Image (tube, rainbow, N blue to C red; front, side, top):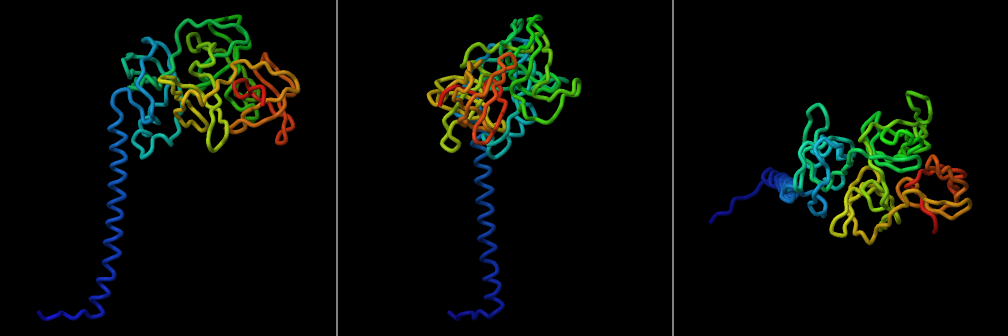
Length: 305
């Protein structure tokens, strides 16, 4: 058989095409992997299932009651992403429309309804009554984001006056109504818009969690099942932890002057010393090598080393 000689042009064409073919194969492989990842996520999301290793649960919420749930458009778009576990989840209020066995229909307002897995739903039962000094779970009622609050005036037990505990006390923003620093502003809650936190393992309470990277981080309980804790952490990241790695933060800590404490700094606990407390406002002032005097709200501080 007669050999066909390759000239310089032929060789150049071959050398040009080989990398193109390799790049094309690599791109196709990457696209296939992305599709497979999305398919795996969607395969797991049967009714009541979520992307995290957490079981389907029931709900105690009744028709017409307020609930706290992930924001609708954010929840839906996160589920379509390549990695829903890495996304931010903003918890806001909605109303229960139709409770289900493992998922329920909720109304976000303006007829924006959606099915939400029950494991992600925090119930707010009707007809809650509180007194001055109680800690409640509610939402920022001039906005919609989930908040804990301390009751400053409980004379109207179903519409108490509160200070929110999850707004940074060093926030420079001011309240539009009063001009007070946002972290010190007071608000009157609507009836049926809050639930009293009276159990350290109750949804809404804060927990300290052992983390391999950051040490001890602070998160907020969303749900507990099968000895697992589903929690909302720094920057709105949802995670699941073994319950034995979690320690509830005191709802109303009893901190003495000069006592050694641990308090949250950005996302994790650091050591310091208490200067004094304003228990009625839910604030402890602390100091350490980084802060001469720092106010810390209840839920972000614990006594002892």
